Each structure stands twice: as structure tokens, then as C-alpha cells.
Image 1 (cartoon, rainbow, N blue to C red):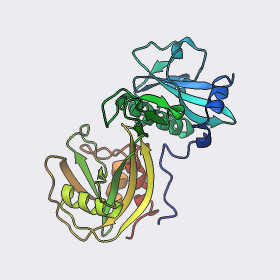
Image 2 (cartoon, one colour):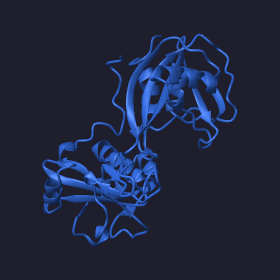
Image 3 (cartoon, rainbow, N blue to C red):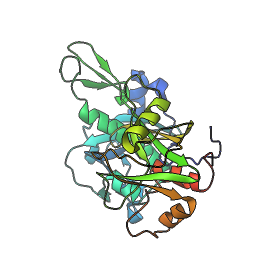
Image 4 (tube, rainbow, N blue to C red):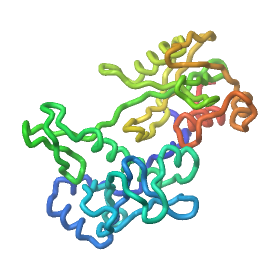
Length: 302
């Protein structure tokens, strides 16, 4: 709807997902024998980062002792060469360090294509770590189709990676936008409001409901802006903009600690660090993209 909207971080990874190879046992075996194949290790949910400032992904060869015996998740092909991820236990980094990805990403340690690739890898690692048993009968499942499916040997149930849709929206009123602080946010951090899409809802209904529940605002026009995979643990952030004519907040106190209306001049001051009691979301998060696009008039109706 908003053609000039910026592309959020963690999107458009360069890997060819090569989904047609996932169910091809012969192709999977051949790729594991490919000397160009590399794997990105995760200690639990922390990727291996190397290089100056720990800003590069720590790819390892499939014969590396660090990943010996690990279940490999096929991520795709990079110029024809196979790429994998592996979720490990408590291991030591042979070089570099295992870094909590959210902190590294929001702290600006790495970004671009590396962050997009690592994002998809982390979502799959998270899914395998939390879905080791069948949801139908409780039996332990096994990884199949290159890590894109888990099968139950007992009831023959099949399970696929899940993605939880979340709406995140910029609320606009007469040249102002709403910014809020969730009760679980770090001190002084303000952002756009967000919430999970519930069963039976479309995106627009979820935007209207969450805006009403969290801020007590009714909504008029609602528009889709952009989306961002967010592997903490396995969400898809659906960015939207919603219009309101309401002025007064009625906060959902269990979730929202404070909310404010900011003009574009106020928002610029926020970006420049001019508020003692407010800090903006990081650029790597789609909330930061939405706010900056609204400030730059890439999105919005006023």
C-alpha cells in the first residue's frame, strides 16, 4: 500500500532456499558430501560470531569437530554451495564467541544479509529446540526433510516449523504518532504497540483490537506497510499504520506503562537522543523502521 516504505532488517536473505531439495534424500546426501558445504553453529540459541567486532557469521565446515554428530538444518544454497545451521548444547567457541543474537543485532554488531540469514536459521533452531515431541501423542519426533519437518514414529503425525503472526502498528492522529512503553521494556525504551493475531482474526481486526485494548483508541483507516521475520522466538512482525481521531489514552496497565503523542519535531528529538526519559527502538527492529518512515513521510495519511 505504501510503495515508498523502507525495507526492514532481517529480510531478503540471499540464500536460495531450494525447497524442492528438502524431500529428495539423494540430493540431501550429495549436499552433505559437498566440500563447499558450511554450517552455522548455535550454542543453544546463540550464533557463533567471528571477526572484528564479532560482526561476521562463524561458518564451519561439516567436518569440524564442533559440529560433529549434530543434526543439520538445511538453510539453502549460496551460489550453489549448501548452507546449514546446527543447534548445539553447552560448547566452547574455538574462535570468536557465541553471542545472544538479539543483543548483537540491536547493538549493531552485524546486519545486512548476514543478519537475514542468521534470522531464518535461529527461527528453525528455536523450533527444533521446543518441538522435540509430538503434539498429538507425546512421542519423541525425528527431524526429516533437511530439518523442515519433524515426524512422529508412533502416530505418524507430521509437524512443520511454525511462525506466529504479530501485528505492530504506528498509530497516527493529525500529524502525531503514538509511542508507548511496555511494562517489560528496558527503562525509557518506547516503541510502537504490538500484539499476536488471534485465531479467526484478519490482520486489520488484530490491529484494531490491539489498539483498542492497549491504548483505548478506536481506529479508522488501517494500511499494511511491511513485514519482518523476528526469531525471538519465531514470529512474523506485520507492520501497519492505523488512523484514529481519539486523543486520550486508556492504558492496559498490565501491559502498557506509558504512552505519548509525538509530533514529527518530537520524534526527531527522540531519534537525536534529546529526551532524558525516552529512547527510541533500534533501527534493526521494524518499529524503528515504521517510526522513521512516518517521520520521513514515506508512510501516513497526514
